[in-house]
Image (cartoon, rainbow over all chains, first blue to last red; front, side):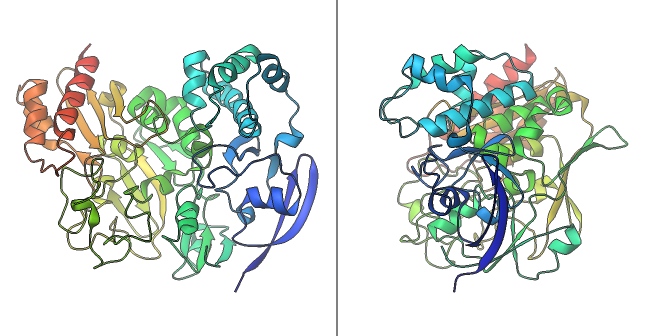
Length: 152
Length: 308
């Protein structure tokens, strides 16, 4: 029988309190409970990065986070993102079908935060390595890297 | 996924108050295994917010709380300066978003990525004791060459553990302190047990003892693509022209301390002779004999780079 559990979290600045089946992932909470379908379910195993959101300011795979484990957290999904990177993606045509784009955007914002924490010199090689958790089936990688480099 | 009860632990004592529960760290492996049907814990106790500090020890070492996230440990300036191979190993593992979730304790206790273990339609002695090991005759190109048994040829997937075992790290649990080299076990007749930990025993911290040698250390990982893949072979090593530490990943059911190679180098052997002495004990399977020269060459390459 399903185990129900309360969860309260902030999503894109709005506070939400719900009761969910403990099996619910943060991704399903966003998509199915809050109707925020920007974060995508690609593989549901943490391998493709389409579900990437910012969890307490850091990029994370929403498919592998249990919603109950995110109780008390601040979540930003692509719907709440306001970053020059979004314009850079348009400018550079950094997508084709667009399915991976919300995850690419959240991941790249997280990459910039990590590079600051790490004190790293960021170049194309660094971007390619640190974006390896985001797969693009259309192969828009060169333009994705260029868009990220534009905003550094 | 089977239903389960969830509780977030406030303290270590609180975490231990639910006998028989499964501990949840970042969830990057456990939640996936639950979704695959490989794991079906009835009760999860979330310990991911406990022990999240990195502290200096009085003797000049570092005590890393089990809840410290992989990226936080990799970015720590003390780790990067004093044990660079540890930081490099962490950054060679998984992806940026997974490293923000994955914890130090969970990293050590992650399960093998052997494809048979992760596929509930296949037999696997680790998942279902006594059901058999199809990998021995099947797809084992990425599996063990050292220390395997007729019951299991799986490898341990952690990069971090390889660097830690090279530098004599200790593991503090809720019951005891033990060398990290004794945490994981070879499969033998009981491959279902990855480690020596008992039920209801929680890792609370990992300790890096002071090791000036480790300032000159490096981690090199060989894999089937440039990033975000598990090791075919990996090497953590430290070398200052005299003393040496070497450990291998991707070759056994445990992180593999290359004691024979270390001893040979201290005795004046060449890097290649020392590496070959270590791999002399390898028993490759039908499709993974390539790992023997790969491990030898990777050891030589890392040591040559450290020797400058």
